[in-house]
Amino acid sequence: MSEIGRLRWRCRRGMRELDQLLGWWLDARYAQAGDAARAAFSALLEQPDPELWRWLQGHGAPDDARFRGIIDEIRSRDRV
Image (cartoon, rainbow, N blue to C red; front, side, top):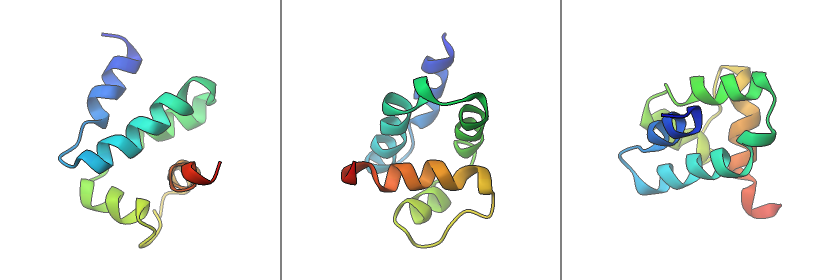
């Protein structure tokens, strides 16, 4: 399985909305992202679903600065 395939599988969560948000970043941004952002995305996928959902809904921010840019991009996807 390719790296993209593994990441796509890891984007599958217990909530369809979360799947879509994470999948959007993988489809729209991953290919152009640098190594640091790709590594941050992979690490972001290790976070618990409730935390991811809270951050993506704007109810708090991750302590890990590596995640903030990705979270911000996902949250602003409709404004682009």
